[in-house]
Length: 278
Image (tube, rainbow, N blue to C red; front, side, top):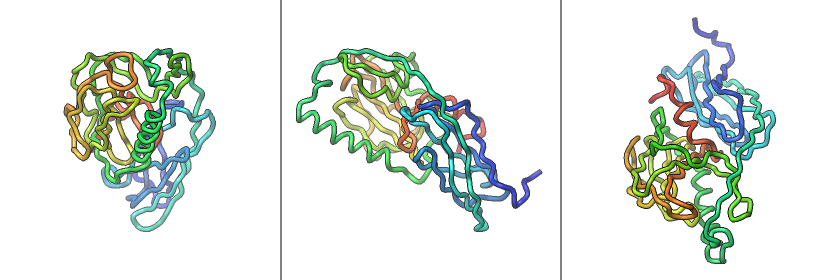
């Protein structure tokens, strides 16, 4: 039995209790077809897309790695196809989470930068920020996501790192163990927005999956994709290496959703529902 026309839009979040670094899936159930949605969560936009007959819309949202524990609200407005509008509000609690500490040693030039390297790192940081702050209007991915390399983790998401005895930013991705030359496959369909040798991350490929969702593949030995290339899920985009600030060959795989740093492994589990494909 359908919802009455004056019923509110229901917000469903089929997730466990939230913690920093979590990816969450949000579903809207409306009594009649939705025309558009504007929403935000923890000061980041939440970009919804329609499913089926337009009465159900979905979105991905993230709790950034360094969000403080507390009560937050997903808020917004839903415009129905007949022009009426309905308000959205869903309160969500972010619980504290302790991450392990990792101590590593690298060449000192990656810790104490000279002026040229410092300027390069700052320039690259600005370029990356521009990517994270942009969003393609269309959804380019098809569920579910897959790991780009089939291997064990060597370093988990969120580890607090001490490099050569100095505290550094937390680990914003996962490290997948692999030998140099191992093929790296696109975790899902999308478009290449960066294929560049970066100071810290080495040879790095970034895929835009649409609606503010990006995956990152760093420390490659070779890159087989260039900016603007469309890629399909499973397509080889590069090879594992040890370029940039690393202690050995592996793939650093990361994910950003509308700027929030979240665990990329959530893409392979949270988004595996059989009715979630395009």
